[in-house]
Length: 369
Image 1 (tube, rainbow, N blue to C red):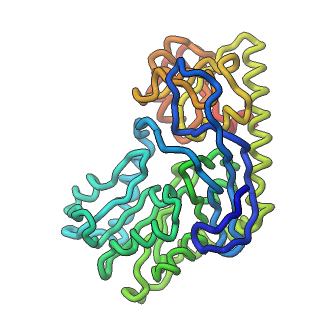
Image 2: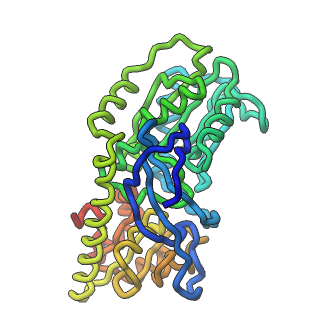
């Protein structure tokens, strides 16, 4: 492992808490007939002992991800978030807004402009600066947060949504670690980063998306005398109970990775030996490390279906497993569909009733534990 310098506070001391070995770039979906093996790169998570930021050690890959289809769960969460933020008084008609979005797609701007807000011009300061899963894609976390903070007009608010490290540890979501995602935030670590930028987190909202995401509202310290809200204190208190600065606690992700990989391989082998067919659903980045860690190939998993036309006709990184359309998945009449994004269970059950109508079942990694 290379010598680490914390991406947020510059501290040198910390510990490796998750090592997935060498993995293919999870955003590079090769053509179906592209030769194996694919290039592989180290995939490791390091925890800073000073500020508590969990972070990607290095990323020698080049982003090449085919654009996915935005799940209904994500769009519904965005609508819910905008309603709740507006109800709390953080949004007003006529206010200027700028958005730093995720490179994976999705935007809140249409929802905000529907409420009479105005999209800010490039480089213009805005009354509301929104970052939805965008900051984690910045290799230089200080520069990324500073850029967003500079865009906030006097008296304005910075809104940051992130997949909580507390969720990742509590639910054992080790395969959230991926190339291109440089930071995994506890609320306390993000608050420390905001304090370095002279911002104070004032309000927080929780959402069920990905098992637990948080949206923080922060203002420049010089612009407000508001106290920190109770939900922020509650979240920080819960994180302290999880000991998210403790390497052994966060290191539980390593133990989850090993047990999940064994469970998946054993289940797929047993299904195959019993003459049952299994197809995956959701060619998401988190599926890549899982399949590679578990040593799964086309002999155990027939295919992975995905609604993204850009991914169909390709194969999963690091394996010979093809990515197919949902229509081909239905035509295969699998005995089970392994769902790689558990949040989508109800959505896909409603979207593809033919799976259960033909005797198939939807399965998630949690069902195999």
